[in-house]
Image: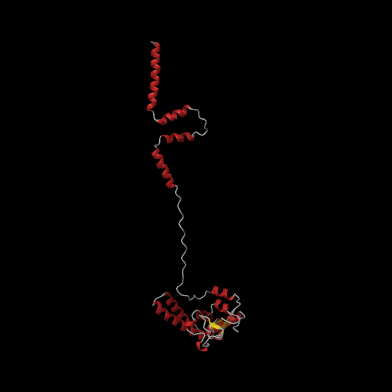
Length: 258
């Protein structure tokens, strides 16, 4: 009887332990197994992190990882927009300041054109602006002074009346220029004219250019406003003073128009 009783007691204890294990959560069993097993790791914090993850559902872990990815998105740098450059509607320069004038006076120039342009003299500006539109005020070369037919062995060079290119015989390809270069619209020829004549020519050129502009594009264009500003500036020029100032500049630089 004692043997059977001991057996029943032994069997009953085993059954209770198995049934209790069945009711325990898997994480509890894992922790009990870890406690019973020897710990060979020096870092105990890793075990605590793993224990915490055992009690968290798999779906929660996935959501946590996704949220971490979203917060880890790097913000892109916005492109820096270039600064807008202000462009003046007219090409009429403002009067130079005293500091810039002093700097120009200290410069040395090798050519008469560079001196008059660089010093922004009134006569230099008259010449410069006339050279930009001389064909509105004068015709060069004069058709009456050109031959009616190209010279023998030459053909007319298209776009350059009075200039011919050799097409036969010796030196094929060479040019022959029969234009009157003393009347050409060049800086040197204009600089030798009095400022009063340059003023008249520039005003004619501006008025003619404005007339053709309105015929092509109508009134109120930006270019028309620019031409109006140039006309006002041209009318205000004092020719006598412009000539005197130009002579002073050239003399100071040791330059001449000859």
